[in-house]
Image (cartoon, rainbow, N blue to C red; front, side, top):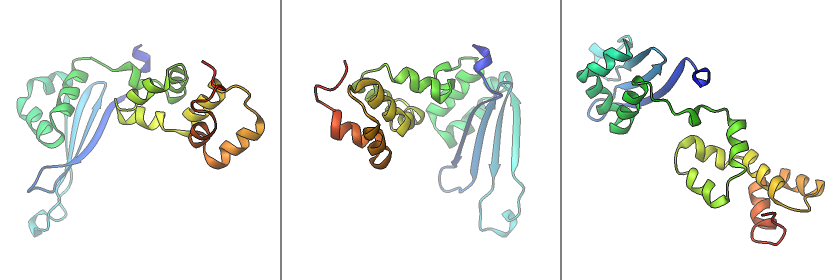
Length: 174
């Protein structure tokens, strides 16, 4: 399973809470936590300030409550908890699967389950709303699918075709 891990495990950007306008990026790789910041200010003394980058190994991040506090203040409690779990080696392998593999898995789920899954993360929402997902739904679950219907779907969209022509009808393959 470790081969599914890319060098970069997580990457998020955010602006710090008011009154500061500073911009931050948190990157977690296999070996370190990187916190980059850019000063955003109209004050003359801040103009042209170079961005900063703090790089620290996972173990040091886990023991640095000040750095964790800064990450929590900028990105929120959930992101801090996720960063800590990544540094502890707790990886979400499902999130790391390629889109085509996930789409194949999604094709076996009931639509009500994919609706719930779409609420789990931005990635799953994007996948469950993608044209590729709806094309698989139509092709895999709809009887008497013809090339004319495929051409129609390419014009009007696969999701719209599904809900217009197939949803709730006897043509659905259960």
